[in-house]
Length: 579
Picture 1: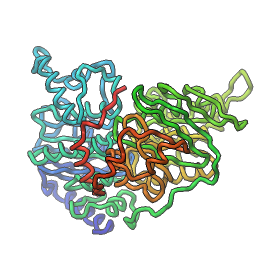
Picture 2 (picture 1 turned 120 degrees about the horizontal axis):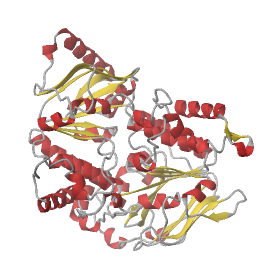
Picture 3 (picture 1 turned 90 degrees about the horizontal axis):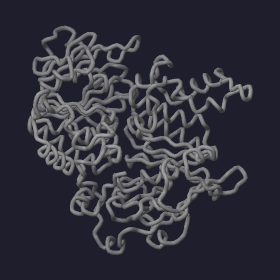
Picture 4 (picture 1 turned 30 degrees about the horizontal axis):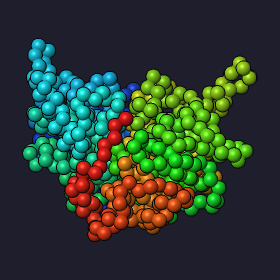
C-alpha cells in the first residue's frame, strides 16, 4: 500500500468519525482529541481505535504529540476537546487509570536514585493503612522479575544510583509488569535505553501480554522494531493522525512516507562511510583499564574519522566513552589529546577534556544532559557565556551573538522549541536530545564523543544528524560514536569496535559493518579483524577475552534469530556490570 493511499484511508476514516461518533469501533478509542499548551497544539484532532489482544504502535517525528497522547490515555493530562474511552470509561487521573487497569511506562526513566531496587519497584503499591505484601514477599518478587527481564541477577537492595541506565529503565518497565490487573499497557519509548538483546526480552513479554488479552501500545522511533512487534500502527504528524497501517502494510517505506509527508523509496542508504584522508592521530589511550578486572585497551583515532563503539548492555562500552570524554576515571592507563602545538597532552577530567577541545553528548539526558530549571535558550547556549563575553573582567555577554548561534542551531537540527524562554522540560524528549546535540556543535569541538546521541529522536532527524556528522569530520574534526542501534553505523563509520567484558573483543571495517556481523561479535563470535591484528600493537589494540580459535570452529549462522538463540544458550557468559 502506498503512502498516498494510506493518507486517503486516514482521511476517509476521519470523515466517517466526524459524521457519526458511534461509528468508532474498538474496545479502546480516541476520538477527535485536542490538547493545547498555550498556543502550541500538541494534539489537534487525533482519531484511532484499538482492541484488546493486539500490539498497537504510535509512531511519528519529534514533537508530533505521541507522548502527549500517551499521557492523555493514562489520565495524566486532561484533554481540551474530544473523547478517550477504555471499555466505556474515560481516565481522568493516574489513580483512576491505574484502577481501570492502565499501566504506563513513561519516556523518562523515573526512579528514586537514593532508594533500593525493591523500593523503586513497589513505590505506591501499598494502601495507606496496610501493606499488600510483606517486605520478604516484595524482595522475592523483585529478584524474580528483574532476573527475568534483565537476564541476570540484580541485587534487590542495591541503591538505584549504582545502576546503569538500561537497568534503571528495566525498573520502570518492571513496575508495570508487577501489576496483576493490567488490561492496557502503554510503553513510551521504553526500549530507547535497551540494547538488542534486552529489547528482545521486552518483546517476548509484550507478546505474552497480548496473547493473554492485554492491549499493548508502544510509542517508538525505532521503525525496524515496530515493524517486527506491532499488529497495527497509527502514524502521527503535527498533532494529528495521518494514517493507520495494518500488519501487512507495516514497512519502512509506508511509515516514513506518512511521518514526513513525502514519498520515500524505502531503500536503504547506499552511502559509503567517509574514509579519513590523513594518518594523523588526534586522540589515543595507552593500556586503558575500563574495569578493574578487564584487559587493557590501546586505542588511537585519526583526524577526520568517525569510529563506532558498541556492545551488549553492560559490557563496558559506555564506561569507555565516558573515560575518553573525561566524565569518569579509568582504573589504569592514560588518555591523551593532540594540542595546538601538535604535542600529546594527558587529561583525566571533564574540565581538562573541555579545555583541549573534547565535547561529550550523553544519551541519559535527564541525569547527564539537560538543566531542568533553565530555559530552552539557556540549555543550548550556557557553555558559550564565557566564550562570548566582552569588556574583559566585566564579562558582558554578547547576547546578539548568542541569539544568532541559537537560531542557527535550532534551524540546523529542526528543533521544535516554542517560546525560547520556556523551560527545557516543555519540549518532547527527542527535542531535548536535539538541544543537547546542538549545544555541543555550538562549541566547535575538535573531538566529539557521542554516547547514544540518537536515543529518542525520529528517523528524519537521525538522517540529518548523520549528514551533520559527515560534514563535521570533513572539516578535519573527529567523532567517537557509541550506539545501541546497529543500523546507525552503516554508511557512517568506517570502523566499529565491539566491547565484551570491559575490553575490545573485535573490530569491524567497511563492508563487514552490518547488523549480522556486529551481533556475532557482540555475542562472543568473531567475524571482524583477525586475532593476529587484535593482539599486535596497531592503531586499535585489544587482547580478546575469550579463546577465539575455539569460537571460530562453531558454525556461524548469520540469521539474527540464531544469534539470539546462541546468546540464550550461553547467557552465563554475559556479564551485567553495575556502576
